[in-house]
Length: 255
Image (cartoon, rainbow, N blue to C red):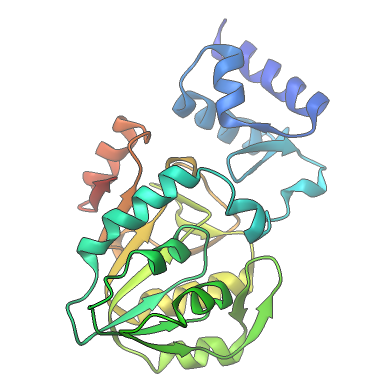
């Protein structure tokens, strides 16, 4: 099957089914997930569908809205746990400062912070704060703002202003998508503004993103690849895409 024929078939199948994952499309057409992502990008540019986290929906579908945190927290759990565990080596030393972004992968770091690592943690995530509240060595700071129900993250002018006052050793950042052309991106403008301020507040920026986020471009860019020091992803990530990221001087850790 030629690429054009495959892409037309994908567009028809997405229109019929309403929502399909990258993995399902790769299996259906016997191609790699990276090939599917390229096909979906082509089809989105043609206006035939919309890319969403982990797959695609019809162009007119309301499903292009972000998945709720509770939904995302149930997806790719093993990969996200391995990413969080691998991130421990990138945490600041005892006495340091850490900024933790909202997200289903970043929230998992709470279970992996050593019990004897004395660190000040700043976060705008209700979920992260709730998981860290009982940690014996963490001095926890919850940032202000309006909490979005979808992500359980504080956003808005108060959040951005609070982040602009900070300078921390390390920021752990979540993202809906990361690509060579578009950098790091997310669907919501207010969420993007908070993430942008979060990235600017850190001396070292570490992005936690499982393989389903790689090559994905959401609506609003909040950082370029040059703004990021390290990407921590899982072992299922496409090696060719990781090589392309590495070529930009981005450090890549596979968990």
